[in-house]
Picture 1 (cartoon, rainbow over the protein chains, first blue to last red):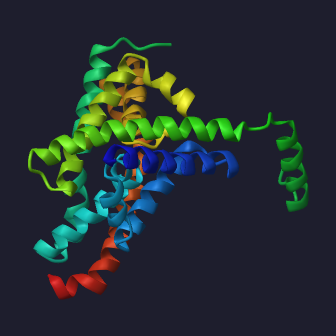
Picture 2 (cartoon, rainbow over the protein chains, first blue to last red):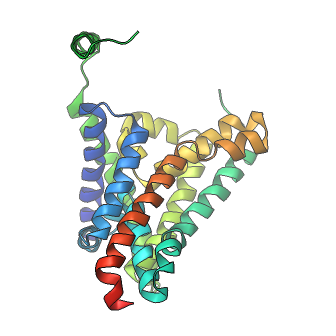
Length: 116
Length: 153
């Protein structure tokens, strides 16, 4: 059941993004930015957390989950350390993903031959 | 030359009329099942990390890292580009697509050197996502702190 919900919600979020590309004719990069901001705004209003509880990875894997993590990190750090957390929390919560992405991208660029 | 709004609109209509119609239903179906499948793979790791004793919010962090590595590897093997051209936003929106958007330019611009090539181009697509995500979290987080943080912190 958990897997089915992850499939459905993750799939539907991607369909929503595809709709923005097909109907609004936005470039994919714009849509990715839109979804991160959307995740942050919904996260700030406390509306994304129920979706994460409901759909698990279906809500955290699409880029809206990245925006949600940023804001969730801000909230947690702000509770712990006060206003300083507004500036430290977002990057703290997402640092593993970004660090791993930089390392993985560099490693792949080193090991795999470029294609043309 | 700057077109008047009316002229720009007729131009836009003419331009779109010559565009091949977008196969919306096919795009949607592909985005749905590709995005859903990647999320399901993510759920597999999320469940694993939760079973290891992490809280759901914490388990999402290593899950994202695993998917980033998978996305990077598939990009290196040349498979993710094929998944992306089939799945559209179903491949671009998940965190694996975020990894792909960093690895692809890293590979492409390696010939420009490690500093000006790989280093400078790594965040070509991920950079805007990162910038606006950070700005949004600052804005939203500040508002949240003003309204709720004062009472709890």
